[in-house]
Amino acid sequence: MNWFSSGRVDTFRFVRVRWGTWTETEELEGIIGGTLERNDSTAIKASGSLDYILEPALGSDLVRVYSDSYYPPTGERTSIAQGTYLASTPSSTYRGAIEEGTADLYGVLHVLAEDSFAEPLVVPAGTRAVDKAAEIVREAGLPVVASESPATLGSPAVFDDKDTSKLDAVNWLLDFAGFASAGCDGYGTVLMQPYQDPSLRLPVLALEDDGACIFRSGVVREYDTFDVPNVVVVVCSNAQAGSMTAKAVNDDPQSAFSTVARGREIVRKETVSDIASQEALQAKAEALLAAKTSMIEGVEITHAVVPLEMGDVCSLTYRKAGVHRDDLVAVRQSLKLKPGMECTTRFRRFPRS
Image 1 (cartoon, helix red, strand yellow):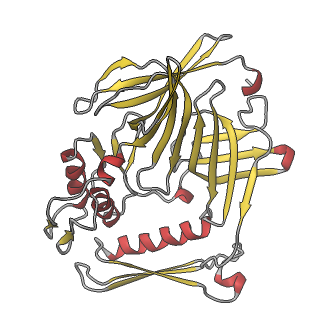
Image 2 (image 1 turned 180 degrees about the horizontal axis):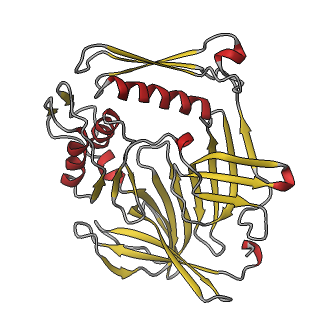
């Protein structure tokens, strides 16, 4: 099935979600469009805006956005929760009896980002880092699903009330345990999951210019080789076993940025205050090297909306351009809330192991 001629009918629903119980209470009227943004490089991950002709008076409640699709030839229906958001309506314009305006949307992690501790938080040595991170999230009123982790603090961690948000503390604890930073699903549940090297994962989505093509021509490729490191050194000066150092080296002869190809080392140094083990420190060094290398090349694709999370690995086959990639990870996406449900997703290319 070709996206452009499939006859698919797309609509959006906007539903009030009660803060505290997280139950859906009513469908909101008067919302005529907008944009949803997801960005894996920002702390709150999700944001957007809604255009309205009747202000959604939500108070402390949230809005959940659903995309609904119907395929007349088969009768198939799909519904995807695209996100659950806090909403702010800073201004409106009256045109006679009609009130027009735009509501700003913020992902639920904004609750943690704008909150801080009433007094310095001291997390004792021996505390399981992910358990404490999940506790902070639950106490802030957000639902959370966290993977199990045995990582425990080797020394006390102190989060100052003046300079550290609750989201800062949560992400520090997750980083200590070798987890990715906190994310959230379409229903507003905060997700805590171990970091997974994209080079060790298979694509979850294949974009191909065949009879089932769902992307537009005009794929944009960005490429910047300036100052790309081939060595990352990470030092931990306050670890359970004393000072530790880990070094990750790109010595792959097939890589244009490796020590072999360039004949020299371009080193980046990072410092962490605590980490669970030497193995965890080495894994962090290797993850940083992969991230800093993969930042040099990006691909931007406009396509139909599909179930896709930021961080998912995808493949691209664009025969007309002679392009085939199986090493793309989704990092940023913009979704237009109008028929066609057109997305623009930026993918970052990463080195395969």
